[in-house]
Image 1 (spheres, rainbow, N blue to C red):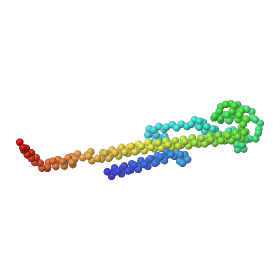
Image 2 (image 1 turned 180 degrees about the vertical axis):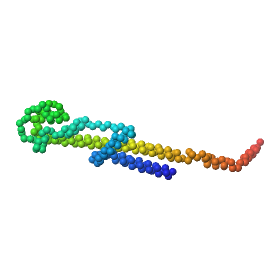
Image 3 (image 1 turned 30 degrees about the vertical axis):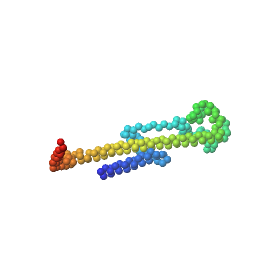
Image 4 (image 1 turned 120 degrees about the vertical axis):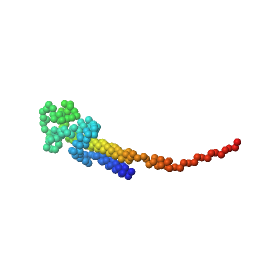
Length: 220
């Protein structure tokens, strides 16, 4: 009985420790932890196949992804001037090209009229401030999406760990229960139970009881 209580105590302690570890992995973020390459390969590519797991698909907001793509497109063509992004000095307008680089880099509009508008307003300070603000927002959106992807990877690693520990816990409980049941002495002891033997001995050695006296005759 004491061994069984010790086993139950060990199993309960291990389950609590495993729960704490899984929760710790589940709430990790790129700001606090860096995922090692071996962790990504083992817990995202190898173990899910062995545990017959399928990763749930994470869908990004298409509008946010399209807006974040502006940060990857680079600065506008006029921000490469020696003045560090300041409006350049007035110069004679260049001949109109077939399609300017700003229009080819634009991810939001495809209208040909955008070329003429940019040639007319690209020296405006307010336009530069607005574009800087848009680039900042797009860069923050891209960083947020990257952080979300890393968080989803950590959550999936925690899910794989939880499934792995579930299988280990189930096998341990099944094997331990089978071992305890198969060690019962009544399965291998072919002797008669002691209560049956004692009852037979008591029945054989018991003195016979005298018959009860007949009832007295009643009045006629």
